[in-house]
Image 1 (tube, rainbow, N blue to C red):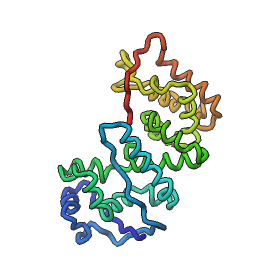
Image 2: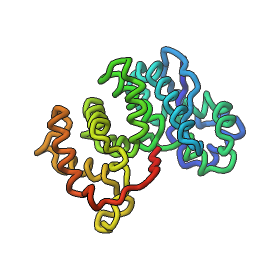
Image 3: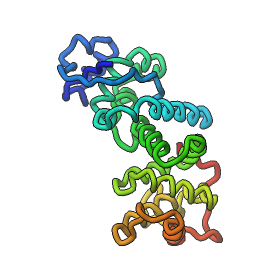
Image 4: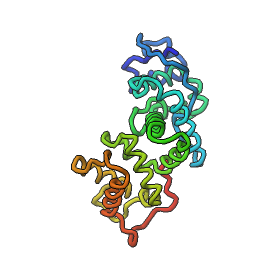
Length: 257
């Protein structure tokens, strides 16, 4: 499948949004002469998850991860980790699908930026789905895939903070962290907000501070290279800097996806 690429100047242009709504991008100067070739067409998948029911959100996102695992991570990484490719693919080839699935796109340019031409980084659902699919396929067995899909989605705040740091953007490290969380039963603790510590900033959580400390200790502590048991020692040590099970107030029903 040939995918034509948008010209570099499409972003931050409200006229581009109008062209998207009017289905006139193909007839405009927004389409460049550049293109990439894909081995197969990628099935339609969700790119934004806002259903109030967390179970529905999780199921939809897992379906996106599975499509990325089957079709996307097999494509040249320079293509699928490129923001312009995804914005081109979505706007030029999936316009009708997106408007049908996300009718709020017609509500204004801000919705369009939030859902379709969102920056391709750790906050972008396609970016996350590709990394999850890749990391799980490379570091676990097929019969374990579902387990790790669920583990990661139940600990998305930790996942987000891990992939924010380039040194931790490592599948083996991620799986070891998820195993530690699973074995220790600390998921609720890690996603809970740290209270009465205004010195730490807004919306700090126990899990975020563990990743912060691991990052601060690098390269003295080469945490991405440690085996799981050694990593667990540091993980619990750094958690202990902030968490005391006798005094900490934990949040109920924390939803970080």
